[in-house]
Amino acid sequence: MVLRGCYVAIVTPFAENGGLHEEALRSHIEFLIGKGVAGIVPCGTTGESPTLSWEEHNRVVDIAIEQAGGRVQVIAGAGSNNTAESLAAARHAREIGADAILSITPYYNRPTQEGLYQHFAATARQVEIPMVVYNVPSRTSVNLLPETVERLCEFKNIVAVKEASGSIVQVSEIHRRCGDRLAILSGDDPLTLPILACGGKGVISVVANIEPGKLIAMIDAFSAGDLSKALALHEELLPLSQSMFIETNPIPVKTAMNLIGMKAGPLRLPLTSMSQRNKAELTSVLQKYGFPTL
Image (cartoon, rainbow, N blue to C red):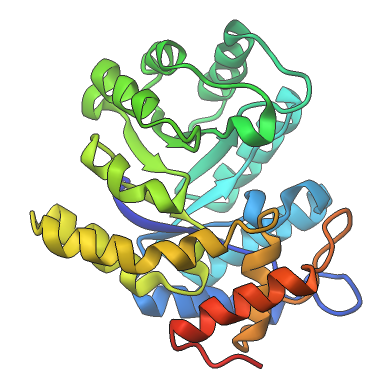
């Protein structure tokens, strides 16, 4: 499986009554496909996976695969800090036809590097589906080290790593050890261009929920060897990318979508509405980018 380009960690739209807003989800997927993204990633952090029931989780994955209809790749979120739950989610994704799964390092229970290896190995051995392992220490309190990533290369169905450690040195070390055996995907929008320069193949993006076009253009420019254009697009996108993290993700991106007329709906507790100060800052950034705000 080839993973390359701009993938979008899609939000999960909710209705005002708190339930899934399936029509809005389908509409958002159509918007992204129309913009030319390489794929979508439902039920990740940006999709508020911690507050989805497993029934809802599976329903979102089902809708994403059905709506995509093979036009783009679907990398289904299948992570948990319970290995048995991860296995169940992976099996569902495989049965329904996902192209791959995204599997996060277990959070809260803080496994050792051996525990991380065994967690991913269990899924790789038992479920025949391509896997993207996801490293985001700021969320999980554990860091999947490059030597552990290298060990995981023994499993042919582990095809990529989403790297959100914030360390370019770590990304470089993963590429030094694994080369192009694994696709390295940026998990941090502002670092996408530096990660590409260190051997990365693309991004699983938050900001692409609202502005996929420029991000796609940046990756295409880099791939074509037009580094000046890639750098210019990176710098053009940087304030917008940074604004997506002025509060906990996905608070800013869902707020931004609602402000520009995309139906993202409310957040689920324990996430709350953005503070008025930060909302004003976000609105200002959106207006500078030419987005009409409500």
